[in-house]
Length: 102
Image (cartoon, rainbow, N blue to C red; front, top):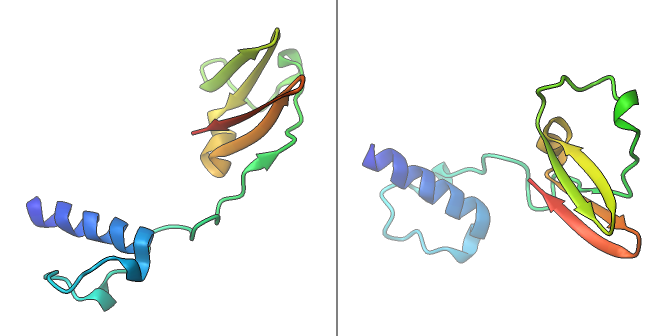
C-alpha cells in the first residue's frame, strides 16, 4: 500500500511540476511516470452559461445533485452532471463576477 501511495504521489507530482521536480532519488524511473489526465487548461471552463427555468429542465432527475448559489437575490443551480465535464463555471450575478468550481 505504501509503494502504491508513493507511486501515486510521484505520478501527481510529475504531472503537476513536470521537469521542475527532482526525481533523482526516486525508485521509479522518470521515463515511467506519465500524466494521468488532461494537460493544464485541458478542461475548458464554461463562460456565460445559459439557464432555463427548473420547470423546463428535462435532463435532470429529482435526486440529481447541483451546486446552488443565491447572490444578489438571484438563485442559480449548476448540475454536477455538467460540472463533472467542465469543473469550473465563470458566471455573473447582476454585476458580480463569480467562479463556481467543482
